Length: 305
Image 1: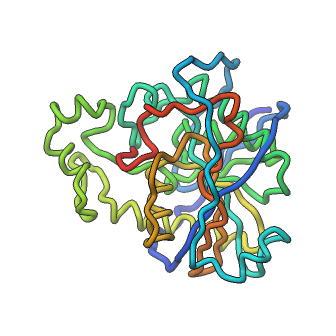
Image 2 (image 1 turned 135 degrees about the horizontal axis):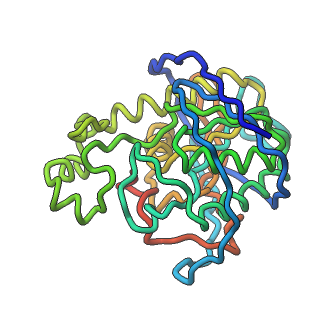
């Protein structure tokens, strides 16, 4: 099946109200015809292929599932979660993309566009298999960067979704002059940008066209709020990046500390209704029991990019 690429209108990125976050569950996939691609907000023509799988290197450790996040803000609406989606809410499963060779080599990616490595494709296949056992999804959205788009394609094929909506608003943080460098090299070659990248000042942009954390936060929250508004009463999947997910967590759970990494293909479930966000589950990686996760990979932590 050939891919059909259609350009959609540019969606405004206004800031919208919101409030609290989420994560979840999955099983194994048989190959099905590849879906079409619909591109939102940007015109691209990337052919996505899925090479044969390789064995996992010994540097990967077996993964452990994370405990469900307990938050005082989760009220009686959550009592209806297991029975279905609460009235007026949208359930959004937000995933980080599969691993890339740049993750493994600790290279800063940002808006640059490396593909999944073989382990990343195995991770994507594993989470797709889990998700294929879940209740039906209405749609799947993805960052237009290859590492997220390919992850989304594998999931869509397994879950019987006919298209992936690619949206540049779901991209990782733009890290300007630091993109393409390892952290060690960045400290030597671009010391000013490196210092600002590590700064706690959220309004500070990264030199070279990079985003500030405040700019990233507005983009992340408005993007997910827009998707939720389009799918009230439905379940949808969003494939994005570690920095994007950290901003969702920070804004949705301001009184909770986010410790540890957001691993590749980890799943986080949100219930969203206008200004109300509820975390259902965070950091689900049980589907990676046989594949494991690479603790030393770049991204998914405080310096994600």
